[in-house]
Image (cartoon, rainbow, N blue to C red; front, side, top):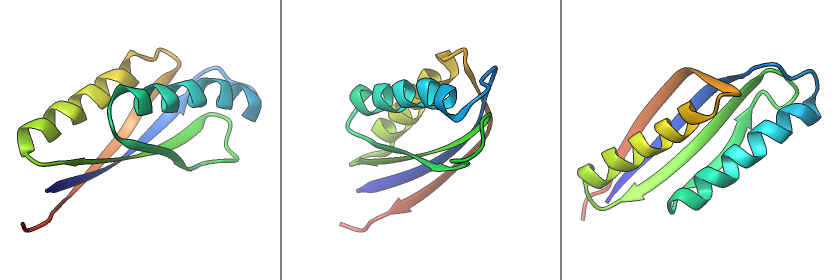
Length: 97
């Protein structure tokens, strides 16, 4: 079993309130959750209008599936024109069978 934890630091462009930020971030989070069986949460910058940090957790049985899911998550975020990835940190935990 392989576990990946990814932290995406995002800039949310053009928003002028926390309500506007939520209107961008919430559909992004929900879309990522529906895309695959992964966990997603906003993990930092809750009081900042134009910053967001998303935490993504993925569990798979092999590395190739993990790589595919990581790329799909990154591509989904990059497709959203209202956010820009400024940093992505990936950590793995490999659990012995």
